[in-house]
Length: 478
Image (cartoon, helix red, strand yellow):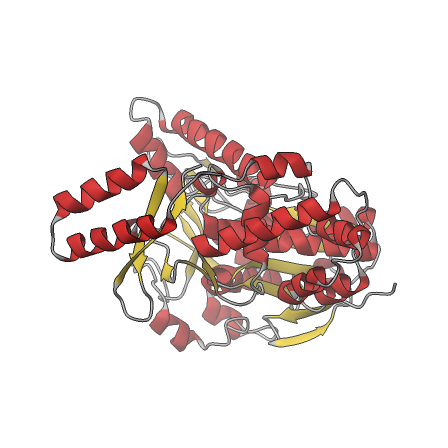
């Protein structure tokens, strides 16, 4: 069947038919992890969302005609800080290698369990320092960046004083509005508070590379320049685009994705750098952003006890359950990630596993494909899955297309916990514990928690988002 993709574009605030620059070479770039710590469940959302889009694009245009690039940031202040903290006896560069090696390996293992395909390319920032330096030198040459005290800074006001795209178009805010809402670094070498760093000097012992022209000593790139350089190297240069190309039409790719939190400043700054360096009106034709994630109705926070890494959740839940639970909400909407939702997702997937058995097939049903082609409308696609109960072949093909049915039905069923528990008794003990906590009788609260733990019950404390009162949910230990 002929499929017309319609995608919501953050840049235009409209949902339009997707028309690739070259149907034989569809190109997408998505901002990937900074490998300083284990990825949390919020980091999993864009990985899952854009994996599904990657699958859809490959289905429409052919596997050989779609390039998906997701970067790895392996040079960053957070990496330096963790390396120094965890390995104080090692030289910093050696400590950094240990941290990034472990966290990158764990990230790859985690997202593989979430059913995500391997992107076409996964460039590391440290592999493209020369590309970043060349890009920075071009921006200085064009008068939109300047050198000050061994830093190179980009000037949004200089960009807006020139013909062409305007800084702030993606965020739909003026420079004054962005300054009022931004956390900007105050530095005496800045000409304007909104100027952002492209290159900075390295301190003693920090990773460093020979700096762009006009700067003494070793330095390292700012965050934003990394993605501009890596997307250029992986999506433009193979086709003759990039800094050596004077044809603006060859210096644009199709889709740029990431979380909604990256719109400003990261994606706004990427656009500014790339457009000014390459002489284009846009960096990518379509900008897609997934919404925020909450856990049990609240912002994820270690202080609230609702902060979970992907690995922690994978210890208790199959990756397919985490993936399905994420896709139940449309990608542009905020999502509330709950234990109840995970339980529901697991039961539903288990039912489908038992229904389809080992039926082969990877082709999605027409209704499922139409729903996904409508700006990844996964809630509608899941509704279509429910309507395929009488067509197990179509159900199996649709589920596999969306990244499910990677195990045998027997293996998947075996992972569900079973135990003889008295739910009424568990609820009674939880209520008693909540009363003890309210009365600040923490000894009684701990005793009840231990009693429930011996019954194989794991408690999750939180707050009711509507009333602010303490609530406790439970699950069986796995």
